[in-house]
Length: 391
Image (cartoon, rainbow, N blue to C red):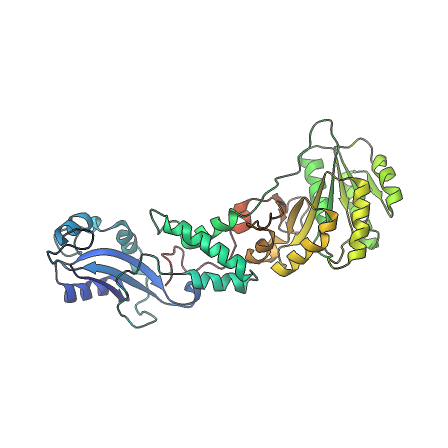
């Protein structure tokens, strides 16, 4: 039995070429839609069909052509109906009407063992690295995804990109929302570099617990470097009728906490520090040791590169963060770079992510982090509403 792979601008053209070369009794073994270009961008679509002749010879698996015909169905135009085609062929038949008429590269034959998936790993690896993912992490994600895809029973759905998202999601640790227990006071501090939105995030959390959850909340700030920051937090405290304390030194910390009274939650806002400012972070760590927070959330911007986030993780390690908040998610189209610095690997345990923020509105633009929310914009998706994996 002779097996060939045909490429053509559309399915009809491929079938005509198959009949011409293999005869009217040829059988369709596999069909898929492909697209040229980087990850499917700027390329043209074409259809690739694997077909066999009707010779009465057994293949390596011991099937005759008649066996193949009975199991897979003959070409449209013979007595068999298109519904006897393999499922991937039927799915391709449903979309070929949208395909451009000209392929972007010459029609030709490919190797006999070409699988249903063309190998997209190089393109995805390039895409990940272009977004700031290190080569080591990109290779780890690609290997994990390739293993996933190889074990799929139906390799068309879900797509390779969706499997990549799942591979990344498995490395993401989630801490969930801040939990308040009846009769217990919880102290939560927010730390991070300058400009990542700590004060606004404190206000969003305070509003959520005070207005939506009806809990008693107190605010404390040690960000005395910026007068505007103190005024901003005071304005939020007045609007929500919350007690607030300002601390300038470790000597004042315990008294300021006591002044907030019998509250369920104390949220501590801190001044932005440079991750490389060892002395300033040491002072921050000393203040937090006095405050004894139950949780310390490192706020990092989703717009940051993997290197910037890793610098923040290293620089603020002395403050012992227990979770991360990913801010400004609305300001970045893709999250692969920032997630690559926060995810877990065999060598290290990633910092769990608690919340994401996606705007300036208080209290609306904050949500508990989920793997789906973090990976849904992982990298640019290949062109097309539904992909059958670009070549």
